Structures are given as structure tokens and as C-alpha cells.
Image (cartoon, rainbow, N blue to C red; front, side, top):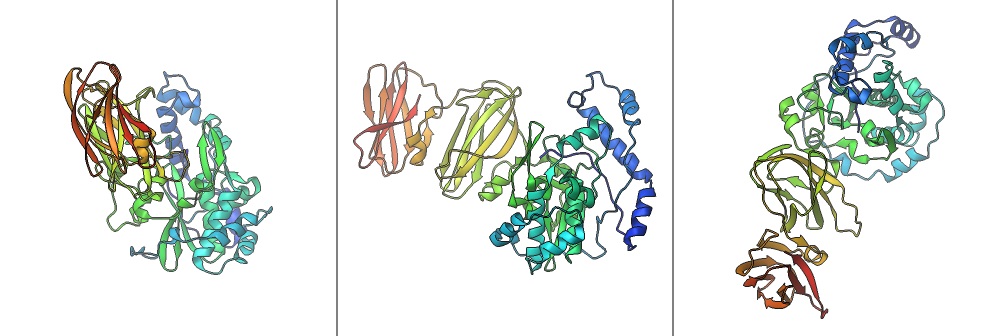
Length: 486
């Protein structure tokens, strides 16, 4: 989800009546906010001049001249970003794993067209009783009724206009940026008797520059449910942005997300809102591999490589841990996003998924790993991305076919696509349920049997020039199916 340069800190909400608060807030001019917003916009434009229509020879002077013409928004509403009580880290109930079908369906059916937070809170309260149901119905209603305002985000940079993110305006327009989502959630939660705060910090959206962003760029919420604090991001729960267009897509993952998972993409400015027993540093956050919620939703763990940047020689082996029904594929790209075929070789052995990677030459690459359950769906969601710096190159891997993956094939030797002709080559592979495995030289159509040891097949084969195919035969089928090609 694209994130925007936002407010750095908000003052505690004062206990004053509504009319007096509005008059005072409208008159308030907060110098600190102006400076923070100014610096945030300047850094964003400086780091991404071409995105905002500036020339490549952009200087600090013309950035400043452009930004200072902006009549930056004064505060239109005070925000609650902290609590006066200690935040105790314990082992809260895993609310995210619970089913909220009834609450979600009710939230989707509520067609409220007004713009009163109090009135909306009263409507939502009719259908829920527990604190977790209250927290959930707010999340589901907001994510189904408020869209991300890409135009407002662009106006922030092109016209230097910060959008009005008050709850009233968000309800009137039904669109906002992340601070508007967070503000609306906090305001409704308060009216429904929940304690909630707005958390500001850094989020790894597509515009996040690792190690470079110094100003907070995102806002989300923490809400207290039955004595425990939980993390919520209604912005990311509402959908995604692709090609500068918002795509509404409800994502329940960002409701009461496990803090140990949330920290991979969200780093709060105040470390207590990590909700971790041992908070991590900003440098640790920046070093984390770029993971998708799908990684956690499929119960996949990073075993061998947990950092985004990997330095290697001419080959790399990454290990993931996954349930038996999860399968994976991988792609390797160059810096200019050219896809390199047969430079990745994914295998599963027990609970481990091994992603073998080779490189055509020394250089920088992007390795993307996709995974899904074996459910018949051919769509593989992205689960983790790595930036790899290779010191050398090596050959491609052999081509695999459907039956190799369907029968949990695992190849030990040879793991290179190019074989030396007119020499004995040792083959060793595992494939479930296979009755026999044969290696065929296509140049002379000679078939060589591998010796079977349960579901493991081994043997030396004199390979010739040209293609070499490995075939397997399975129970109830007289045909031999190609599983590997060299």
C-alpha cells in the first residue's frame, strides 16, 4: 500500500466541550506541524523528483521555493496518540484467528449516509456486545466504506495541499489517506467505549526508502480489548494501490495482527507500540526481508535468511518452513526487471521448502518467492522478496515438469542443466509413488533404468550430446511421464 508523508506527532486530546474545541482548533497554528510537514514533503520530492514531475536536476532551492508557496493545513482536529496508563506486554488472546462472520456480514450491510461519528457509533453498537466485536465491526465498516484517496495524495505533492482528515470530512467524502482512516477508527472506538490511540511511524509501502526515510510516513491504530492492546491498520485492510489506482479489497489480516508479524512492515515511532517484549531498532526493521501477509497466513517461516539483503557467490539456497499442503515457486529478475528462466529450482523436503538459485553473472538481482496451498488454484501470491548481490555466475537448473511437483519430487544430483557429454553422470532423486524412473538420451533414444530404493532412485548414466529427459511411471498408468529435462 502506498503511504504518504504524514504528521509526526499529535497532541493528547483535551477534555473540552465540542463547540469550544472546534473554534480553538480552527484558530490554532502549530509551528512544529508546519516544520514536520514541510520537511517530510521536501524529503519525498527530493528522493523521488521524477515521480512528482520535477526535472532530474532538482535542487534544494527550487524544492523550497515550491513547497514554501504551500498554505499548509492547520490542525483541524486533535488526535489521541498516547495513553496515560502503562502498556503491559503479556500474551493476549489470538483474536485474529477467531471467526467474525456474523459481525462482518452485519458491518457490510449497514448503509450509513450521514457524517456524524456519534450517530454511526450508535448504529454499530446495536449489533455487538463484546469489546472484540466492537473493535471488529468498526474495522470492517471502515474498510468497506472508505476508499483510499489517491487524488488527495497526489494533490499533497503537486499542489502542496494537505487533505482534511477530520472524521466528519472522511464520512462526507468517503475517502481519505492513512491519517484519516486512523482518526476515524479512533473516534468511533472512543464513542463505543473502547480505548484506542493513533500510532504514527514508518510503513514499508512501495515508496519506502530503506535507511533514507527520516520522517514518519504512516498512521495506524492500537485498541484495547479485554485488557490487552492490539494493532490495527484499516488503511491496509481496505485494499491496495496499483498503478496509482486504489483497488478495494477487504483484508482481515490487519485486524489484531500478531505484533511479531506486524513489525515486519510497521515500525512505530514510539517503541512501546511495537507491543513486543524486546523492541527492535530502526536498523533491524530496515534489514528485514520484504514479506507479505500471505507468508504468515500460510504459516510459512523464514528459516535461513531473514534479512532483505543477501550477499552470495554464484549460488544461493534459501530455506522456508511450511505446512505439508503448501507449495512454492520462485522467480529471479535483473535490476531492470528482466525475468531469468530456469535460474531457480524449488523443492520440498519434509517441512522445508528449499529455493536453489543460480546467477548468469556477477551482479544485483531480485528474488521473489510465491506460495499457496494445494487447492487447485493456479494463482501464487508473493510471500517474500530478497535483494541479492552475486559475486559470480553459474549454469541454469534443469527444467521440471508437473508430475515432478505433484509427486513431491526432490533432486539431489545433478542440479545443473548442462551435463558433460559422453561421460557417466550420477543421478539421485526422490519421487513419491513412482514405480520406475528412466533416463533417456534423446539423441539415440536409449533408455537407462535407475535403481529403486523405496521412493529414491539412483544410478550412473552415460549421457550423450543433446537433450536428456528423466521419465517416471506411476501406479495405474502404463505411460511414462517426463519429470526433468537437461
